[in-house]
Image (cartoon, rainbow, N blue to C red; front, side, top):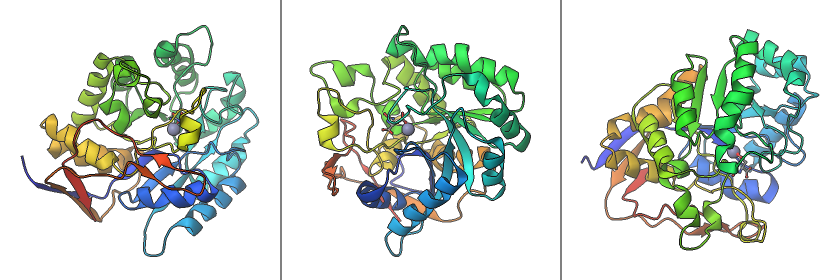
Amino acid sequence: MADTLTIRRPDDWHLHLRDGAMLAAVLPESARHFARALVMPNLLPPVVTAAQAAAYRSRILAALPEGMEFTPLMTLYLTEESDPEDVAAAARDGLIAAVKLYPAGATTNSASGVRDFGRIRPVLERMAETGLPLCVHGEVTDSSVDIFDREAVFLERVLEPIRRATPGLRVVLEHVTTAEGVDYVKSGGENIAATITAHHLTINRNHMLAGGIRPHYYCLPVAKREAHRLALLEAATSGHPRFFLGTDSAPHTDAAKLAPCGCAGCFTAPNALSILAELFGQAGALARLEAFTSLNGAAFYRLAPNEETITLQRGAPVIHPARIDTAEGPVTVFDPGFPLHWSVTP
Ligand code: NCD
Ligand code: ZN
């Protein structure tokens, strides 16, 4: 196996940067490795309007340490009240790269999400005209649907009807976790793509639940059984152009994770690339890592790939810090549970 690998600088097509002290602490962890990231809008209150996205973008750039380069690509949080004209203007001005659909109640800070999908029709039609992608959190929130089935049911009950009703709508199925999701994207034509996280390529639900409950492996959508992880790994390492990296790095403090009702989210910004290099190496697919991290996403978002490069180097196991300190408290870094031999040099 080669010991060094130089690839175009990666982009992260699904990232939670939060705000305030947490933003200041986690932003360098992404900016160190990634040129651009699609920044999720699930703040409290959410980033709904173009004006809110512009203000959030300014706060991100202000928090970026001197000498680091990083481009935040903004998203708007879709609500039943979203104004199609505000969305279209934000896209035209280059302020936003996508709109994010959270079914109400699906995940962290999603209370303002969509309940009645009929009410977002005008926005979706406008997006289909302009080519602006809709990023979807693909889980139903119906309490009668088992949490492990919520993605597969979403495809049938929500996503397929939306796509049929809105021809031309470009969709990214975010953090896909199931074989059903992978198949849906593969067979869905050029207007649908999916992001895949490093943690869903690493763990299955046994890692989270067998031999003791591991709150740091709890995220949404929840990790599924091993057959699904293998389907994700195949999709990611195959070079298929409509699968690309979105880390969904989602920092929560240890106090918020290690609680009777702990928050969902894995913090992978510091080691996502080391994990991916390890997994692609094991799969004999290092030659396709660049497509997954640095080419496919940019192509789907109709942006040029980054010109700069990073070099991954293979050596003795790299020790990543177990946690980072923030003014809100420590945040634990995702532990893949196997040694990581690849480190990133800028
Ligand atoms: C995310 C968060 O914490 O904001 N959590 C997660 O488990 N992925 C929200 C999300 O993307 O679902
Ligand atoms: Zn997310």
